[in-house]
Length: 378
Image (cartoon, rainbow, N blue to C red):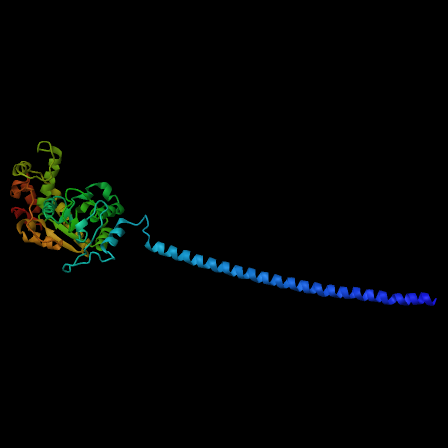
């Protein structure tokens, strides 16, 4: 009994020790688990921070790349020439040469000095020769053809003729501007183009071929591009009318060997064409002359704000000094200019009009009566 009790009593410490050991192990295990969990949490926290740090770096790199790309685009847009940029804008950039490679060395002038860069050829030694843009505004049979041959007799002037007689070139202002751009950039090549250094380039433009219809756009173009205007008029509008009628007749009949000639180069040809004496519509003559006068007045008013010089055909014929003044106006050295054209109508008016008496009756007592007494050469 005692043994049994002793045995039970002796076994108690063993079980207690085992239990204590198990308890200790459990405590150690719990402590070890906590330590392990704490260590893992610490590692996870470091990993998250590393990931956060990596994300920040990534964002920083993206920001830097974006900034570089934006700057590149801005610089590219500022320096790139777009395909739809007009020729006119290119020309403006040409004569403003930012590198000052063609700095002005001569005396100051009151007109723009351009330095075109033609696409068709290289100006070479003439690259820094300044070019003055001009236009001759006039009406048919006002002496513009003869006047232009005089200008083209100068080695430094190129006047390219009646370029807007072709309707497609004046279909709208866009086509008009495109044509003028080509002329002023020295890319209009014909017999008037000079091998010498061109110092003044232009063309003649009839008032019924677009400049009046698009007067606002044309005026703005002239002012922006620095185009000087020569408005060539004829005082005796009755003589102009006779020349128009005679030229219309010649266009149909062609008395010179079946060839129509608006201008001639021999006295024999001139005398042959002068044989025709037109019949003038006397009934509507006053209205016709007044309409021509109104057109010329409007032209002076429309282009008054440009650099303009009004010239009369009669003055150029009588006094050579006017031609010298025109050369100064165009910025070239004046010289004696000659033309091969021969004047057709040189006889008094009464010998040029078939129904002279009828014309005399309708104009007598009007402001145009003085035109009947003008029997001089012009």
